[in-house]
Length: 312
Image (cartoon, rainbow, N blue to C red; front, side, top):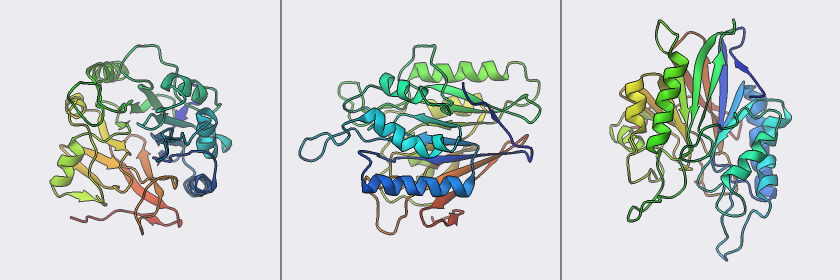
């Protein structure tokens, strides 16, 4: 890992989540996305940027033509706002990043070529590309918090099961073993942790249906038709405080289910669908050293800071 992550001297660590940028060719809409990201980074001055998938869009137009002729270049342009500022950044793949013209492995190599990408080179074989963990050090250098990243795939590969992919058993087993490894020497509580992926878990439907959410649901919750069991593993393992997804561009809510906060990001990119009056933006997450909790808010395109109130 090229950049080490650590709490600041004031005990804070701030993450900006960008999601669904859908960068294509560097045209006017992509430049709007760039301007938004630059504004958010200059306002929040985060310690880490996390891109939760669909960073680029490599699908086809309605006429069948590809819209991202040079996906590697598009990816570098999409993350340039963080890279150029020297801000450590990480990412997970979405369902549109590698549809055409480039594989996940090839796009990962592009990311790893950048000085401030914090993704470690994978050493283990498991479902997907880009399942990894990052640790955040305390001010004295000891481990203080953990971030887990999962590749939530694209479409179901199981015959007869339509819709989106899900987190698979070997990924869940990897997470459980990683948590055991980082917490093995601790005598007190486990290190507080967060998890990031692109496609929301089925539990995102459950938490919204429960009526105790803050934010908006303006479209169907497009999770997998199969529950892969990640949420149960997070609950039983007991370290993850919150999860962060993207995928559904006009959903931005968060809600707590069995003590874990399930959060959507705020869609960032202009080169994709949205909703009139629903500004693009980013989610901001703040951790405190030694505290098992986090604060989160939205930073919108007009510069406003939104602390979400209950809407149900």
